[in-house]
Length: 246
Image (tube, rainbow, N blue to C red; front, side):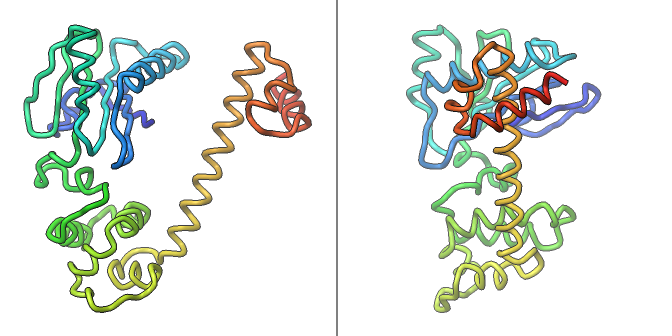
């Protein structure tokens, strides 16, 4: 889940951001998964929890966005029949949900117009060669090039053949590391991208576990129960509890 904060004086004329308010909760599904009614309830719960526990956040200054590559038939049916919400489709790939106190949208990324949402639309498997070629053209000379390495690494892993064909490399089969270097010569090498990604993931897990431990202990859960739930040694949980007490 991603939280995008937006300044109130900033107007974003972008198809997926027109409903954005000050704090915007974004839930992204993997290309092979889809959103269910349970997912909707969970994200709404996360949103309310965020509003209740984040100082300075007005619960009416938020929005919710669901992003997935597959059509969310089950969820849309649930919202229309059970919740009695109204669903409109102002543009291809975007479904607006009316009836809640917060603006909500469901984005079917594969149906987004490529000229408006190339980067989000392409974040999936089954990428066409012409889409891979468009990504290559956009990435060449991109002023935010240093941020694209991990993104392109994911695309290459999921769409190796499409990118090789886009670079006229269909008859050449290097290793994945060599392919990344040859297809994206202006970006960090594949090993560097992998290392940064793994380090960031490890740091994110550590921070999330520490936050979880703090919440569980604050709710009165014992050190032993907290250790079992977070799969950490009791001694580490005990040390963290002492640091909290200080």
